[in-house]
Image (cartoon, rainbow, N blue to C red):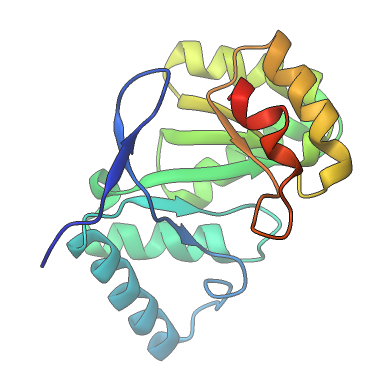
Length: 184
């Protein structure tokens, strides 16, 4: 099987496959054995094709826990590039939410922690930076799903050390081309 293409992460040069696996709804399946077997097959196909990126969130129900269970059963944590999000107000609440993601994923390191929709981003960024310095996180990201937030995303990128940005961009939503993509 031919392996999928990769692109270098600009800040480190690490190769990352161009296609990732989103877990919203599809991995929020609880303990259903047949559904878990299907998701195990999906993960195996991802890895067999050279993929690694698995994107999740605490807001995706039980998805992080299902991914963590399946990776443990497959003994495949080393094959996965785990990405998740923090989306809550307050330092203590952010720490609790991120620690829960570690527990659910059954890991002591998450590759990418993203501040989702820029919720309390200054507060969460302090914790994420400290955890990156400690080696608990490898990359820092920010996200937003609306075009109206592109100006705010650009300000963060201009003024902070950010490794990843997730934003609305498609053939029908192209405003990111004006400022964000050149900045990124």
